[in-house]
Every structure is written in C-alpha cells, then in structure tokens.
Length: 439
Image (cartoon, rainbow, N blue to C red; front, side, top):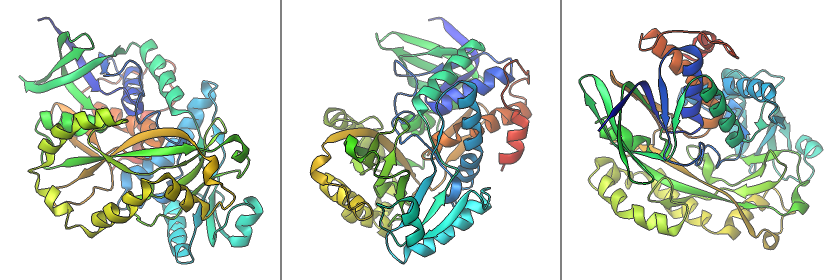
C-alpha cells in the first residue's frame, strides 16, 4: 500500500483544526493535510453552537487561564477577519443577570475577572434592577452585568472561509476520511484512515496535531497519551422561539448559573446572528460525541461502557457531590422542555411555553474527567515528540480558535519543528499573538 507523507497531519476539520491549518500554511513551508471524517468542515460543534464571540468575564483567570486569554484575544481577531471577508460580525453585547439577590456577589466577581482578563471599564458595567430595565424592559432580575464586547457570528461560515484561504495557501484537505489507527514508527506518526467507500489508506508525518473534538481523547489514547482520563458527553438541545418574540429583548440573556463549574446547564435566551431567538440548552447524557439521535446513541453504548467501566475515576465520580447534584437535579430537570422554558420565564415572564414548539440547534459537549473523578475546568494541551493533543476544548472554543492556533504555530516554529516562512495575505503577526498568550 502506497504511503503518502506530510510534514504535519491535523486530525479534525472543525474550527480549531482549520484555524491551525490556516496559520501553518501562511507562516511555514510545511506540507500540511487536514483529515476530516465528514463531507464538510465544521459539521459538529463548530457550527452547532450559539454563535457567540464570548467576552472573558465568565472565566476564572487562575482556573481557566487558557480560555480566559484566548477569549479576550479572539474578539478582535474574529472582528478583523469578518470585516476583511465581508462576513457579518454583529456587536450586540450581552446581559448576565442575577435571578436572586445572592447572585449579585457572583456578578461582582465576574466584573473582577473581566478586568483581570483584559476588559476595560468602558466595556463592562454593573446595573441594578432598575438600570437593567432601562435597556431591557421585559427582563426581571435583581441586577446584571452589561458587556459591550460580545458579538454574534456564523462560525460555520467563518470556518468555511478559513478553509478556502487555507487551500489557496497550499494546504490539503481529506474529507470523508476517518482515522482508525495511529502509531509511532521510527520517529514518525503512521495513520491508517478509511474512506466512506471503506478503502484503507496510510499517511505518515513527522508531527500530528489532534483537534478531533469529541473524538480527541480517543485519538490520544491510540498513542497512549492521557490514558488516565476519560470523557462524558452531553447533548445540549435548544428550542426556537416564534417570530413574535424576536423583539422581546435587544440582547442575549444569560443568568448566573446554579452550578458555577457547569454554566451550560442553565438555559439562556439567545439572539442568533440572523436575528432569530433560541432557548436552551438542556443537558442530555449520551454515549458518543455525535449521538444526535437515539439510533446513534444506542450504537455507541457498548463501546463507551467498555471504555470507562474500569476507569478509577468513574467510581470516584459517583462520590462527587457536585456530580450527584447534576444527575439528580440539573440534568434530570433539564430533560423537560416545559421545565427548561419555565426557568427562562423566571427572567422573561412574557414567554408562553405553548407557543414554543420548534426545535433549534443541538450540539454535544464532551467533558474531561481525571483519575480522581474531577471534571477538568480548562482545555488541556498534551504532547510528546511527535504529536500534540488538544483536549477538553469546549466553550469559548470557537471564540478562541484563532489566537490559540496562532500561539501553537509559533511554538512549533520556536521548537524548530517547522521553518518560519512569511507568505502574502498575512492578517496577523503570530509572534505578537504568542507574546500575549504564552503560558
């Protein structure tokens, strides 16, 4: 079997993998290929999201250091790239509200985090209940944070545009190619892939970057990296509000989460880039990263059960009070559309549950768990001499994809794994980005 050789292979054609390819082709002479299992790029989480360019006030600068930095830098980078390519970038701001008096303390903490993470005082304001009413008359709350530096975009469109730039710069893309095995051989990574027609191929490279999203841990395990870790998957479902509610608010509304480490469990009111509104998400435990329906979920049950059954962290997880609370209260309650919408009605009482009948976006979030049964709060960058694995890359992953990719490419140059070659059509200086984000 003929083996095709590359300098770098990227596994996964989501927004992070495509961003990495983009910066690699514009800043090196490396021969790059992206391997993507689906027909199109950004088929999963990269396009199945709220479309928000998140402000960094939600991210603890000590526990979520990477997410905090890339979220702050991502805003200007996506604005620049969107304007350059005439793609809508809707700077619409966001409101984070306190549903209860005790949540005010949390908002004040968020204010402090936001400033530490780079926001200026002109970007973020604390509003009491009456001041909130002046900008959102239909919202009930005890107070809020109003952040101007938040925007709405179509990440699927942005990823496709980045892909086109990557291909124009000389990068290669293998769609409908799924990785079935990967191993180290004589200092190189040898990858076995299969096409949709079940044709097997072998590709080889000096270095592999794993950006496979929900499958990233599976890929890492094939190279015996992160073996002590396992992941759990949660499908988040949204409901689309009817057109009559599209003017109900001017901003997307988030509330202080009951579970601080799991803010995705508290349903939000989202205004999408095209103007329509959605309520969600819930959190439905599923057995695979692409289990959007019952059939796929059943198919993934046995492989997932076999994978985690003997993990020490699994049993520790069931002694974790936070996790037990999630199972019995948050997750169980979120399965009901009525209960989910009722929680949003606490701050948007004008909503009528009976009128909300159309399902919206559904995406799957994969959470990483360590051997002690603790959820890992930040993204993990694990590497050896021939590979880099980006794990636990959740929200604000799309917001931070450009700055994180620029940082990684500059590190590859610093480590002399690729040669620095600056090509035309540069939008950013990656050394400058690296200096702002390096750890």
